[in-house]
Length: 113
Image (tube, rainbow, N blue to C red):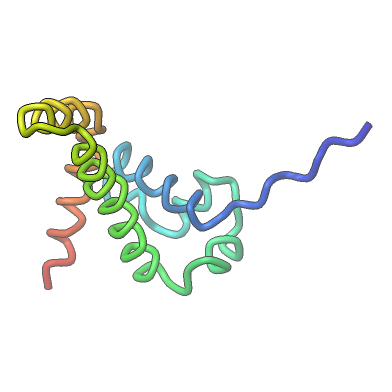
């Protein structure tokens, strides 16, 4: 019996991988070479989804915003009373990986110009 072909690495996989790399290595982990090495993929796989590292970093910032900010706000809005929303926000925020938040802030400082 043959094994199924490996699943194609999708755009979302690259973005999720970027948040992990950012948490573990900071900005130096976000080069095309480092990301491809971590993913076990070729640069061609990366370029199939992103035309350049700048486009990737922009998409990564959007992915972070959606995952770490908008999702929290949507969850908290379901909680009802203001005190319930505050408790929910605290619980969700404390569950996030602080290294990702720190990495995004450091990355933004590098691109302040």
